[in-house]
Image (cartoon, rainbow, N blue to C red):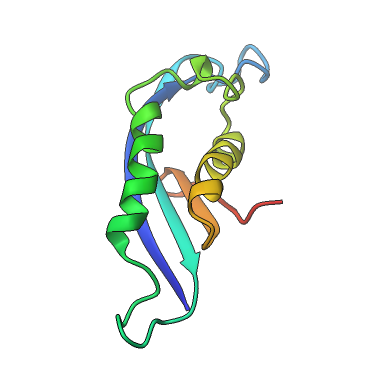
Length: 118
């Protein structure tokens, strides 16, 4: 069974590797929506796969570290495309949330990435 939990954060960024006239070359911001999915067996006694509070305890410090930040200044996010941010998030989350099976990162309401690790 898969369960999920959503988080949001606001961050600024610019894409240094796009052509000079590309609209994403200049600094701008997004309200990102992160959805994390965990997979596991339904615990018959508890009636859940895992406690959402445990998920929140893992994710909140990571999200808080990039909320209201210039992503380009975060080590590993010097070229903070949506795809690169998703990989960075996965690498921060997965060691502390082994049940993680995929993430969705929405940069806008209509654009984003789905990532399930390497």
